[in-house]
Length: 251
Image 1 (cartoon, helix red, strand yellow):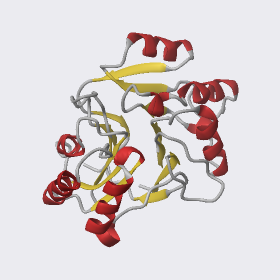
Image 2 (cartoon, one colour):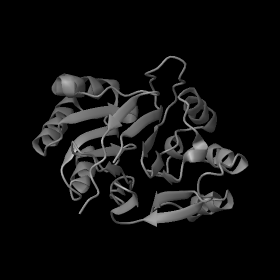
Image 3 (cartoon, one colour):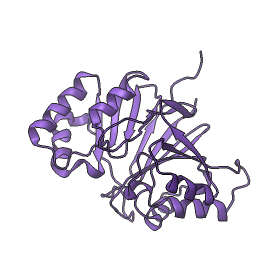
Image 4 (cartoon, helix red, strand yellow):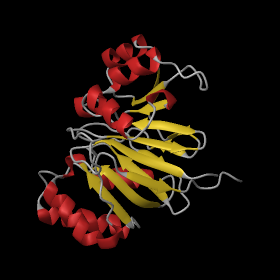
């Protein structure tokens, strides 16, 4: 299988000149047979602008996975669907599927369907595209799903905000197999240094070798992860690109 790419297209910080920051998170996952956007940030102009800067065509997207029903992860969806419908790409299928946890409101999903997308509600773990899985809905203060990539070096877990707890999200992902890298929002802004330290130790204990916290993790917690993981810390910002080798699908 060919090389995979993970592009961060929305984050509070920027990693490349010209990218626009914004409160929220979104990343585009590409590999042979895979075009998945995870979350959409807070608003469409920044999302589509950053994608244009990175030469990423929104019309290529076949699946949108939303982590949870908060504005800073769903706000760009309307603009994305508008672009997708208005400028069709003839080389790809004419249906876009939006995957949401089953906790999403009927009001939200009905609006998505009115905009021309198909909605899939997720309860348990399921495969969205070849080698790309949803963790299924993880319960917590806010129910949420994450994305798991089957990579040769070990699975990659991507979280939007990790409201159920980043360790709980990781434990769910580990039901699909060992997790080598965890990245995304960890929701640790108000967490004490002592608790952050405990979380880092728990992640290391279960085999997480690399970490890339961003968005709602909080600057202090990000610094702690950077210190704890050293050369295995992955710095994230709008414009970041992470190459990954998809695992073989052979049985």
